Figure 1 (cartoon, one colour):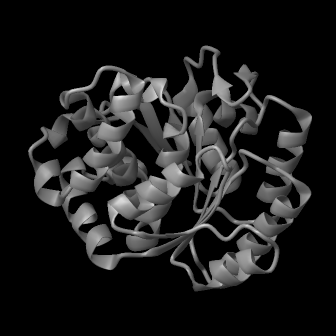
Figure 2 (figure 1 turned 45 degrees about the horizontal axis):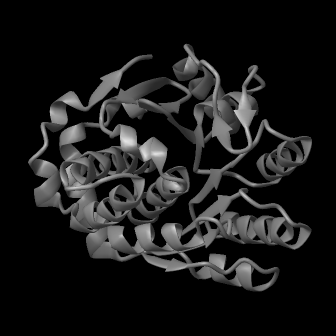
Length: 276
């Protein structure tokens, strides 16, 4: 199966499954967005746990339905916990999702990402255009944790990373791209205000992890999780807001309100475009 085989119309079934499953999602993430990550997991219908110290992180990963590793902060003890949790999840065939925050901006972040990719099998990798390009070895421009370059061939770049890592790849940007080794789809859903709120990238990673935790098909989880996130962004934009702060609140409410029935109100057939 390829991501190009996933039907947008089946999103409603995926959302219903996620909310009915209530999966436990273990996250090692950064302190800037830890509350947002926990809440978006909860609002999708999952159960968040944020164990990030050596020992506890690995033990919790073994009990979870999915593991999210976010490299927004990389002190030595947290990196140790990332590896421990990843190994334990791999041993139990628990999906592991990597969010390589800021990779490409410093050698230290690149080294951590490389060590994780060399030792852990990931179900999905979620990053912005610059981070995905940097992991692939393509020239990328990342300032801090933000992608600021031009990436006209991001679909092929994402597919190349998927082939080399055997993981599904979600590249977030103006349009989101989901790729595997055999193809890629571009998603039309989303709202420009998502780019004005710090932490939406981390929340997308948490969304993909939550869908991977509940759905048996990881291709569906990556595509439908990304699509559901974008639709929530659109729904938040339709609510009254005066700037990024009120939009952020709207977005969390929109995720909580994104049921199968709500998703069905969108014209889902126009949301996915195969591009490879």
